[in-house]
Length: 492
Image (cartoon, one colour):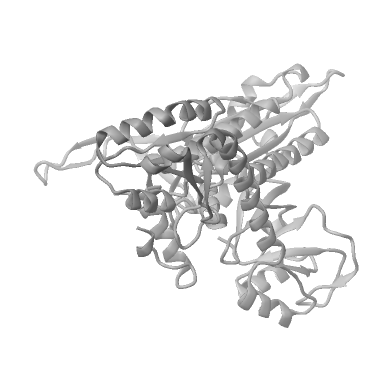
């Protein structure tokens, strides 16, 4: 299977698209720009969702659900937000179909069924949620209000790519209300750290924590905090964002509370989200020319056992021998598959699980039964080892942990060797075109300079790193003074 996969060095984009389809993660659908997430791909999303949901609840958030449709009048109440998303909105104008009098067996939109007010299919939910919060928040006792929603959104993208950019995608969006500015800023920063922890500890994907420049902020936000990852082709991926919304939405929707002193005050807001784009990031961070490589913590199947046998008697003997081991691994929370399909040869099964990125493969045949051993292969390095059956449970548990760490260390090493400091525009252009990755450079802080650099190089400011060191310097393009470096890159 993997032999038919385009090599990354030949065509990275083609490799990515082929891998998603061949590894059975997703496929394009009959709806332009939308995807079908297949069971194996959705299983990865479910594991991501479960861990993130646990982390959200540990930080005091509750789940709720809000309508898919947003009345246009509500959507346009916060002008910057409405303007920022206007070009991507799908809009419902009618509520009924009828038989087409001119085309037998066909339907048309009933011209008499026009909605009094158009409904926007949510590209994001601030408008409908803040209109709702107006009824939920009266007093300081109602704060903080910490709500998360798991949902789908629609953004009418012209150029789509599976997982990375589709017209409809799955995500979560947190929306919180606070009594003070400091509390809201602390919330936005806390959620940035939750995302970073998830990316690094579960996805094994190192990220840079930082703030967006003004032109890259979320529409309607005072500040946007981001985590930026680096893919194997040297392009950056915005992997999650958290926004301090100030009082913009509170004022737009008149959401006030009575303070302890009895005064009417506007609340302070945040929103934050990650999406199925994370699956694209997972693929591009770790996978290789043989197929998908999954970190054990997010792999739907962590261990696959492939019996090598002739006849039902040998298969039953292998299964009986491995059954206690399978039960013990499952008791430790490790997902195991025993693949006894008789429609594929062992070699074809090995190729399939390699393509699908299963972290650990265990092979056991009749001779292994006699010797009390198994062969264990790890997906990240392709190394194979003969292991005593009695030691297998502990060996596998330790190996999964080792693979998780190794994938992170490998990605971190790549990322760190692809952060390049430059002090001139000539150096900047050379690194962007030839080496790729993040370029650390001084910038004069103006949108005009940012736009010009983007126009000339296609590189954007990915973030102003949280740990950026104060240092005097000169903007690479204008020569004007700058007090810290920012990270530029070409990005998805």
